[in-house]
Amino acid sequence: AQSVAQPEDQVNVAEGNPLTVKCTYSVSGNPYLFWYVQYPNRGLQFLLKYITGDNLVKGSYGFEAEFNKSQTSFHLKKPSALVSDSALYFCAVRDANTGGFKTIFGAGTRLFVKA
Amino acid sequence: KAGVTQTPRYLIKTRGQQVTLSCSPISGHRSVSWYQQTPGQGLQFLFEYFSETQRNKGNFPGRFSGRQFSNSRSEMNVSTLELGDSALYLCASSLDSANYGYTFGSGTRLTVV
Image 1 (cartoon, chains in turn green, red):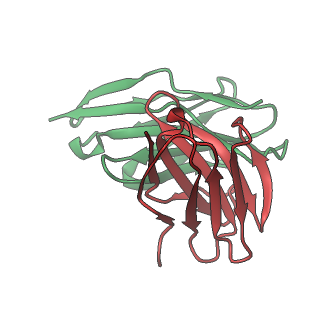
Image 2 (image 1 turned 90 degrees about the vertical axis):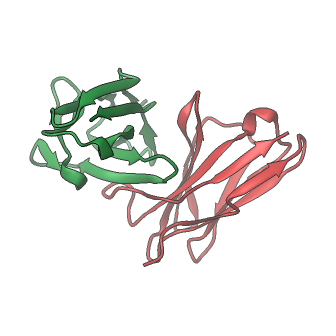
């Protein structure tokens, strides 16, 4: 069975500081990993994905994520946070090998960036 | 190009009734997935369809059903509504949900009273 955990309900960061939103996953095969963002009163938006290749993946709005197979993690990062980054962030995983044909989402982490 | 369109945006239903939600994916997308979003449970997987075939189903009772048409449009139906079915129902489409991310619709907010 596949699962994904976001250990922090909330992350608080000052504007201009680096941010990290944590995600760990569990799949029986190789993972496909995704990050999505949900802004207030707006739909979920795709940020980035890891399928294969380089462990550091770059996505929209200056975000990047690092795939770490040994730690089964896929943490979302940004070098310098903006107030406008305040939103709800979801990590998601799909098992590439078992053909389960479902993408499972974490519970979400709310990011607050203070000016 | 047009995004994922979900109709209706809001619904209020009474316990015991049934409801049908509709989703029109982005043109060319053949994969459609449905999720239930609630504050307490987050995003829960309901179904995934590809070219009119249900490829997987989440852990929901049989009251929840869905289908996909030849034009990739999808519907989900909930029968015998319960108060706990109140949620935001999200539809997501993709060229291929394994290798591409989803594009989500704005959702249908269902309230059961």
